[in-house]
Length: 376
Image (cartoon, rainbow, N blue to C red; front, side, top):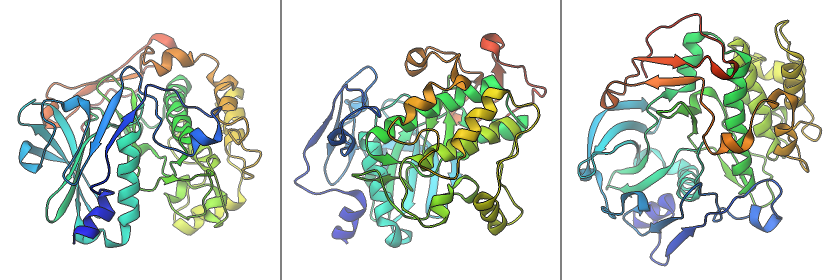
């Protein structure tokens, strides 16, 4: 049983401390940097992640270096999955709120590598638009990951209620995702599961990319596993071909189209029809799309990954320079100095309830047609 637990958690006695340097990594870095996920961007601080057979901790909770399930009070369930649940929890000492991902060991025998990869990535990635892991520990029957609590909930909820976003709004969220994905690619990580449900909002309305269970760490950036959500999967993935980071840019194109129209471009009433449309159809561009939006989506949704916008060698730099993002100040965006279009207003964070939200009218954001109450 110990070997099974170590295999899942990626733990052993000879693992020491891993220091995560305050270092920027992007698509222009050399291949040796991209092949490692130990050098990551910490926006303002250096982080140290300590590993042993009981926990993973960061300097965020230096006053409580070792934790277990008894150190947290479960407040409510934030989400459910096939292998466990995500709880909103409060740390007894610091009173800080976290999201605790709890997985049943008995259900994970065939998914050991996914869980191990997810934790390895979250241990080492520090980015303003990627959810942060603070602790990981285990009980005899469960695995636990203590994650940053995204109080704003899923981007999907807002998109579902609103129907569609204005172009400036979609541009903002797509731009934050460009920075998050290009950071992952710089570390040799193919994300592979970009969709609105995996894009959370923090208390200020910024994106937090979450759920790395399907991510792949690849030394050469290439793999051929068929995985993901059908509506957002690239043609080369569905065809079982070898693929690279460009599958994430396809998914970004699908997500941006989804934000602008309220639905993915190739969605069918069955999974097979969706796949058939992805493989054979071209996306329909609604009349209200600007030329910049049409150009971006045409580039991102090219079925040939070698000519897709974002493909190597130019990578994410070609996307950042596209006219769709002409109003984005990438430096300010990366420093979280650009106001998000949606600001969650939370009166009681412990209830996991967003009572309402504000749309900013500045920066060209359009006002919504429906100001309903939102709960997450």
